[in-house]
Image (cartoon, rainbow, N blue to C red):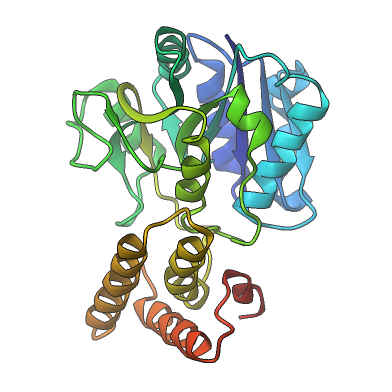
Length: 304
């Protein structure tokens, strides 16, 4: 099975270079990795990386910043090159601050080959810095080496199971999905819940699963993330949009909305150095106001 990797990056060329180092150490190295930034500063210095110099990694720029459009640029590139025409191929998506175990791609390929009905796989999260201050490279290496015990996470456990959403920082799809589906560009910038939306459409082709074999660490680097106001708006607008679209059930959308409002309201009572909860709450309120006016739309964050 041919292996391709896509990395959408924004403001993190150093982290992206380290990810390329990890991909070079894979027991099953990708045939081609595509790194897509939104501007030259996003990919600064990457042309000097060995993987790029040897032609194993390509660099592209998207016309706009956003995880959805940047991933689509890469998917379109792979499609135009004819690399997804064969069914015997997989495309893995990694965040620039994700660090895969050295056998991540090999284990994932093995699962696809052993289970023809599986079309999407997300792996075991050893540690995730997204809800805290984040992890540095040394901490990520410690988790990967087993020097630190894995932390609790929804993407954990010893048994493979079906899931309704991949975890966007580490997910892989068969060629049939990568060839026929695209990320929804109506979910701009950070594209919150775009991985769930994409997974729901992938399920038309087969099973989507969590698998404990491929493992890694999500560092949760805070640089390059969207503002609190914008993210807060997305917390309301995106689930409602996906509900109307049909890729999220009503109870799921309402649960996301209620949880965001409750958490942001409670946490806004004190200042937090890591997360702008007051900005998120303001974004929640803005989205609810737009909902009452009939103009709540994920794309409005671009103007906030």
